[in-house]
Amino acid sequence: MDTIKAYVQEHKERFINELVELLKIPSVSADTAYSQDVIDTSEAVKVSLEKAGCNFVEICDTPGYPIVYGEKIIDPKLPTVLVYGHYDVQPPDPMELWTSPPFEPVIKKTEIHPEGAIFSRGACDDKGQMYMHVKALEYMVQSNTLPCNVKFMIEGEEEVGSKSLGWFVERNQEKLKNDVILISDTGMISNQQPSITTGLRGLSYVEVEVAGPNRDLHSGLYGGAVANPINVLAKMIASLHDEDNHITIPGFYDNVEELTLEERAEMAKAPFSLEKYKKALDLNDVYGEKGYVTNERNSIRPTLDVNGIWGGYQGEGAKTVIASKAFAKISMRLVPNQDWEHITELFTKHFTSIAPAGVTVKVTPHHGGQGYVTPIDSIGYKAANMAYTETFGVPAIPVRSGGSIPIVALFEKELKSKTILMGFGLDSDAIHSPNEHFGIFNYLKGIETIPLFYKYFVELSKK
Ligand code: BES
Ligand code: MN
Ligand code: MN
Image 1 (cartoon, rainbow, N blue to C red):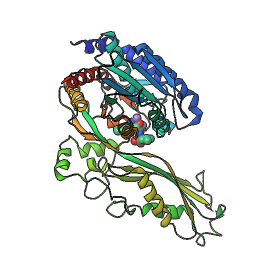
Image 2: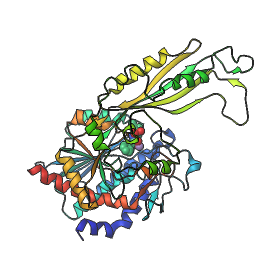
Image 3: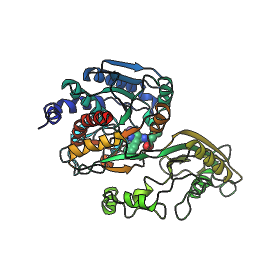
Image 4: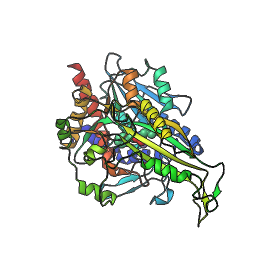
């Protein structure tokens, strides 16, 4: 047995217990009720980096939540790996759908995780995946095998748009200088088939308000005679897709990068079962843009989705009322070459223009970011593939993901370096959903695989 495997076996109970302690702190960045917990989590991350063997760790204040920075510089002439992750988590709601409380982690077996999985908000996204890097560093320091310099930058606002991180990166270019950025905040195909994420979608997130009469009205006395903001909003939203499920905003597709038939054929080689996909979600059919298959619809194609919609009476029983206002939160997932700020403008212009007389419409942009694609011939990609091949016994498959980590495009722009997305989560881990979990197998496999990335990255850098 090689030494990293042996080290993981020997220390796995402790590795799990340490992660459990971190998961107990409810670091929900979206809700200010948790702000002290978010700050406490940054402290816990700092301590963990110190214990793992960083020779310098600090909490960096920002206009928002702090960023934890740590480093172990062994020789400035050697390459430097910058690890990025986030310690904040999504809100846990709806609470009643959790089978155990979101901030009281428990290990349960599932069909996909026969060795058990840790159930807790943040288990996979991203505390568990971030902490694999801390434990991989511990191993490399303890075994004296760290082959290069390492820097950690762990933020607390990823789930709300990483505003302060952009601010921080712009101001700390020298401190963050690196040869490659390594992130585990994505997924892989299955525990038998590793994959490396080569693309992320961009994002534009907006909120809309449709306002009608100056107060809520009796729906009998006024119904039919004034515009009902909820009816109007529903109609406006419905009009944003045509019958082929194309988005109808003028100019929306102008810069969309079209893949060649060869590229699409290559994508189709990745193992995927539509039957299993439907079964996992209890769906009688899939849905989406005409002319594209499921794995294209959720990765290389842009989308528009309502994430929340409200207005009017939502309480018990019936109340006859026409609401004065109706609201919705809308996200657009974007693909390379679509600029998120431009798309936000196109949306705003179009949405305002389709409002009928009798209502006024307000569009408020929330946050956004650019998409990302990375080549598979870089030494970072090759090193990651060699690492996965060694620990899983099969090479990794390149896969473009539908999710977004907007900061990755910013890293390339500001720090001029490529990001390698070595994810260990599975789609079935229910990130952002009730009962989020992270497989023990995945957690330990990640800790095993990461040191090999360092080893091969340094070896390939010498050539
Ligand atoms: N880790 C996810 C993104 C992700 C998950 C990418 C799985 C690929 C595979 C990240 O924490 C996230 O949730 N990002 C947000 C965007 C952010 C700006 C709120 C997202 O994709 O909704
Ligand atoms: Mn994440
Ligand atoms: Mn997330």
